Image (cartoon, rainbow, N blue to C red):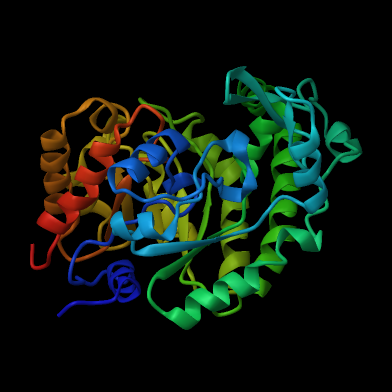
Length: 386
């Protein structure tokens, strides 16, 4: 029996087998498409639509995907996001060309090549003391109503249509990622070892800010949401950024508190995005209430062993993603993409508990033909029973 996209997703995230493996693409920055491949897809499928950016943020470079393209990509999920405050959006639209992009936290990006932006503005770069966290004068106003003024209307419309699963994500670098946005990655990692009191104070302050936005965001959503996306990138291609011990002592309690805060306010499943080889922390994620783990970076260490992941954790957490963006999607042939999608589905799909997508955002080096091959292969190989 054919299910609606929303029914399909709800079955999968409740560890049941739907009619086919759900697809998640084009919904948030963690599951999105950069503008270059998006433009190529529009040409191939003969859709004329303006170039719009997710979060109204051109420097992020992620496309706000037209509904006709979302349908062609067979995406079973639609997104609800917040925005930066109105005055921040206006300031960045009006700033001189090629000047630094500055967000509401005082951090931001620099242009490293035409239309290519990289995080390079770190307002707490040299900070090492708790007092410097307390005295920072540019903490954002997370209660600015312009951040979430549109949320209730968008979510209500999607819920009334009742066609697609609703994934909601306020644009936040969450506590750990925000810390290295404020300090620079190398500096913050050093401070976790050399100045742990400072590091924890910064993480906790960031978490307070995250909750200050998440509360009103959830209020605006009301019951009209199925999945809440949060996340902190914790892994590299070969290991974790920090030791499991450091994670459990310094960051896990903050993640646990944040997830508890969310689950006290919504029925939605918690979708946790974290890149790299994070296999040593999957038990921790399950313990603190993560329902869906993304992106299953198959090019990174132990995350490549999909059979083991499914056997060890597949009945307790939903896997989301798994299609490699390191080599396969940018450099593989369409046939290689098809066969890899088939392998992934046959490994992670049985029993439900799996949504297929690219590992993080589809970047500029990915040919549009490979994106289409990926989603078409799900239609070909992802029908249940597998």
